[in-house]
Length: 366
Image (cartoon, rainbow, N blue to C red; front, side):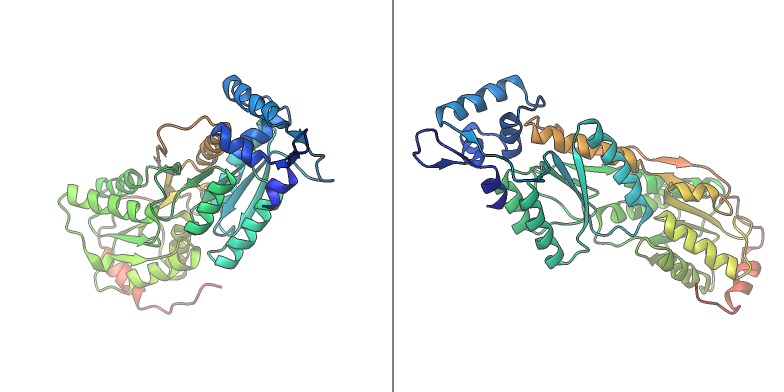
């Protein structure tokens, strides 16, 4: 393979070529670990270093000169897309840890297309990455197996589905966050609480939805399915979902949007109808992106520790590259409800105010 050939050596007796993949297989370690030993890096445990060096000597391995311009020590950070501001927060956390470890970061977007993913895999083989952090996406099982063959460790942040048992994951306490958001609205006196849900294919979306249901059931409030509207975590879907909720004969008095972007879209829909947050409708988001501190009004939301998730993922994948296996394989970071100005008790006469606006002209978002 391209990565192995680029780093191959020769046996001193001319008996044929031995690659670092051969050495890694015999040593029971990853290819990046052998590469670190060959290149004299210090981030390998003494026991592993001694075992690899003994095999290198036994097989007469000699390092081949590196190809001109080739960079060593790289970490791949892969997103389904890079359109969301939360991606910037995760990049910030990963880059902080990678920089401190002397490792470069390569950021890619595969956009859910198999062709993009396979092109990314070809690029990864060529640059001989030390590890991969995959964010809110699902990697084709064939490509996962190819990573295993290459000896490249993988960590998944916010997995789209259930990853293989040997793949560590990093996420947030999404269910607890959904419960906290809904319980806050219940504590203010709201009983008709709309939910703008995220894509059901994502585990984090389903967990936030479950938290909403659990809070209502815990308070003895029946779940009204007409108050649950799907979204895709983006502004436009939050706007459209809020419009749908406002057309109900008995609209909600509060909305829990399972992403900050959808919450901001909902607030814009309310504003265009002449409704005020939180006087006419309370709104809670999820993420705590930097921009929501400056929205009008500042958004009450569930803080998801995105930068910390990136830091934990980067540390985990670098530990795996050094053969320091993380335990446990699933890291779940706490979420926190952040109270700002977008929530208040329900209005005394919500139906007249909101229902009257429900029949007003509805300009589309520009």
